[in-house]
Length: 262
Image (cartoon, rainbow, N blue to C red; front, side):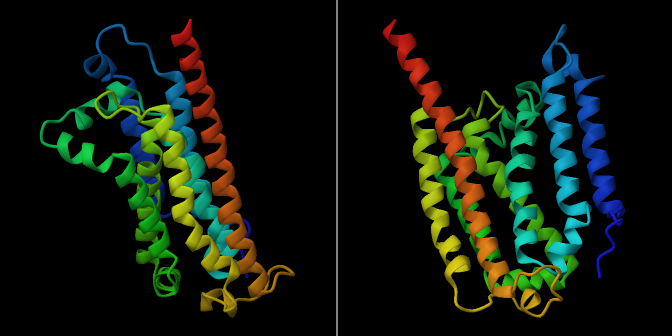
């Protein structure tokens, strides 16, 4: 059964997060004036977001939620993925000031490739394809049975999530966010692109993932109920976050339009 007091302390996970936090502290502290110029203040608001992203990521994959996700409930696994795709990825991008990413985004040998990868169409396609592909029963259950593959899956989800949010939250002047009007169309297009996956999981008459079909029941949910809940969570959480972003984009677009009229 579950050890509710167990939090993962593997060197790869904890060490990786510590190294990321240390590199950020180095860039925001001793290297700040070299990267951003003399007199640049400490990016307090950005730092809070960045370290918040690391905390949410660890909560998703290092807390007892990870055990529940891997061995017992598809709905818990869906929540784990949603934590990585939404708050963790959003906070990560909000935590990066322009001057911190400029050495990469403005690099002459990388700029062309990054410009292609961060176009809204490419970002949306990569996100939909990565998330949908990993939910194929063969790949999904393979990840549940193989720890290394599961880690790869999570890295790909998080990377695809960063690309998904880039057209809205890009911290880079070289690769800036798209216009507010295009952001709204982009969000709607991605939601439409994700609908087949939602329908596949939610309305399937079969239990798609054997791990959860034969897992001990932690709650009153049957495997079918658990799968229905997981599919509903995917759609409702994703749709809610997308519509909040849509509303913010619409409001800012309206404000810009009013300023131009004045």
